Image (tube, rainbow, N blue to C red; front, side):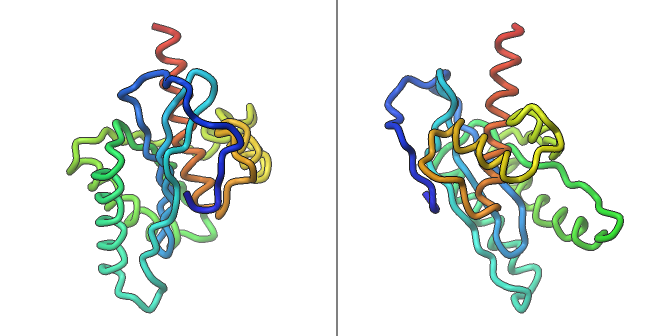
Amino acid sequence: MHGMSRSKPGNEPSASVTTRVLGVDPGLGATGYAVVEPRLRGAFIVEAGLIRSGGSKVDFGVRLEVIHRGVLEIIDVFKPTAMALEQVHSQVRHPRTSILMAHARGVIVLAGAQRGIPVFGYAAARIKKTLTGSGRAPKEQVQRAIQVELGLDTLPEPHDVADACAAAICHCQSQRNIQLLN
């Protein structure tokens, strides 16, 4: 795990043995990922880290290829049953950023499709609301919610990994709510 440790052992039974969620925070320089399993009380982090695709001096296509191969490798090693990503949101002041992030997100979704993993997209406000109860929660409040949910000793860092954890936890909780309704 990249900078994260659990305060409690994760030897409790999982809510569903076959459920493992790969949360991904798309980024061109660093793509955060977190492999999470839902448990009876909260969730358990299996692995988390970064896929570093190089700086802006590296060819754009090569950076996308590194992200794609990195996600495929994570899928092949950890065998997730679902992938969760934050949906691309456009910013009026930074439209280029949204377009570039859409490219990164595209190769991540492609990796999921190539391995037969269903991909779920969540709006940033929904992720925040699921974790904290408020769709406008500040980043630190979201980090604290992740820390509690995963039983971490410290706040999850860097932010790319924290965002990937948040997407995975949001998916786990959404699926748990669907199961409760059924």
